[in-house]
Image (cartoon, rainbow, N blue to C red; front, top):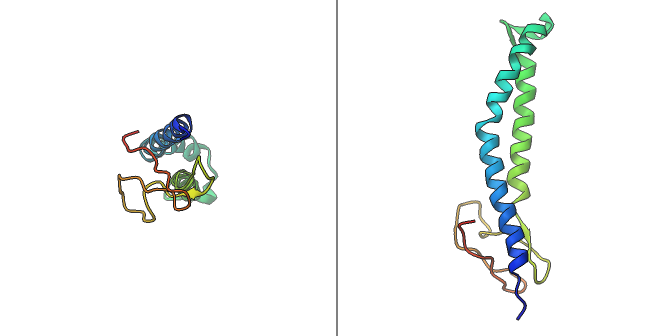
Length: 116
């Protein structure tokens, strides 16, 4: 029997780092956007200011923020099984949180249990 400890360690490290990035992105990035809006307000042309606020700046920042957030969630949606190379959803086929790892549908290898 082959031991996949090193492969699982890489995957669980990636999942742990991904959760930290998502949390940082949710909590800290809006403060950076708001803090950077002061120079934008000061030096923005009056054509895209509505009542003193740079509307297009906030809409653009929200669109970029949402796209990065979706990318961070999507990149950890699947992992590659170390035994057979199949893409596997780590915690089942639903988006509801389930902390019991599901086996690979092709070879039956099960990911290690959380917490990571």
